Image: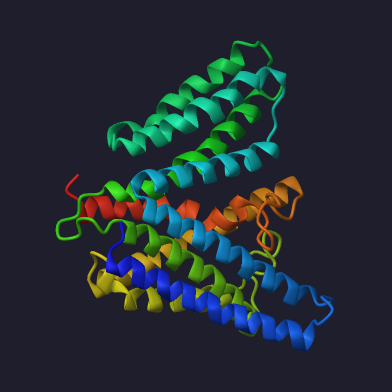
Length: 314
């Protein structure tokens, strides 16, 4: 797990965060000495939160496969809790919700841990989707039944099934890339999150044309194109630490940035529908776990299956 490429990537991210921390502190001293500028305070809160997340990821990477699987299982648990808080359910769904947290989620990650692809690829969308409504139906409540069941299934799909494809990258068998699969996780998260940040930056600098004003007023075509191209360019320059050629890395980065953008847009639509700004308040400056994971959630399963189909022997 401690390949030189991973250490170089972590060192690079640490360097970026050190630079961001210095810039944030300078801005605080010059523009917000008393903490009265909400933009500067939010920026520094985000940088602090990023330090915590990167340190947790580094510890999990260094702990090995079990540590990585456990970390993302805990992320799924926190995300599922946030999602189900906003869904429709009543007392008849009590056992369904218990099963989601204490049966479905642990089993999905256990199947990933033992590398049982044939099971974790279908466990949630087939077995759970068919059997979970039975638990609610047995209680006899018909009020909003389809809405309750659908929202619970969608929560599992987003928070458990999609997220579990991140640690599953560790088990792909790519010739010539043995022992370095953790780089794929770091690469996925780095490109997607970089795209998010650069979309924000380009949007602030040049953003004029809003993509979906009613869903996310801050997303503009200028920001999206600038962020996607910047992340793709930087991600492509790191092709040498992946199993991809330069052209393949460019294609993969483009897929990641597009899926990440679509993920953010869909999750914003859900938040608008429920009348909330953030999914939660666990991460200072970022909102909840889903607010930080939304782009990764949509990108992870696509990245996993494309990589598995074209590069893995399994």
